[in-house]
Length: 70
Image (cartoon, rainbow, N blue to C red):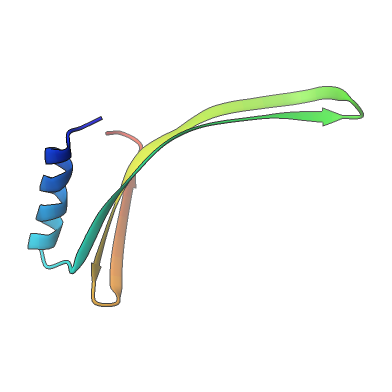
């Protein structure tokens, strides 16, 4: 991933634009499931969720952006 300094720079940029509060959300999660019918495997799925989100608040208003390409 990136450095703490890079994350701080993004947060500071959002705050300098007028936000009262800003946060970064990072996610990396692996999922998997197996579907069975009457004791027999019918199918399976596996995957990886990966991405980052930025959220900024100004008063009671907020904005959120998300990407899966860092």
